[in-house]
Amino acid sequence: MEIYTIEITLPFKAKKPWRRVIEVEEDTPLFELHYFIQTMVKFDNDHLYEFHIAKTPGRNTQRIDDGKMLNEVYPLDRSKLFYLFDFGDCWLFQFRKLRKKAEKQPRVKYPRVIESEGRNPRQY
Image (cartoon, rainbow, N blue to C red):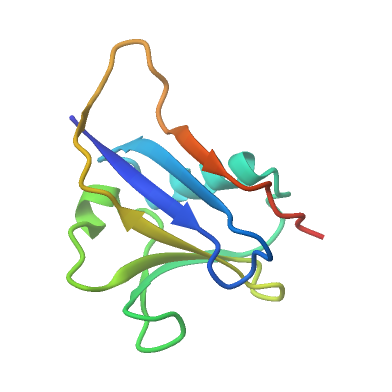
């Protein structure tokens, strides 16, 4: 089982730099990643969301079913994975899979945050 190291940023909404690096199992479905992000940023899970792939947000996006697993999404060829939460407030998170290789460790619960920069944004 491969562990993916993924950098998550809020490039268009955060007033100050915000970044999290997580480790997650390769067979994690996107809907589980959605719940993890909601918990990680302490948002109320009360809005619609979607995952999509694009070179830049808002242009030629390809929506991805949230039942797909990460290893079905990656590798991406020059595109990026985005997670849009709350279609009104448009919380757009950008994902970047890092090249760091990690092996699954016993007694470690995944996904988990391994690096953190900036304070969580306020949802409302």
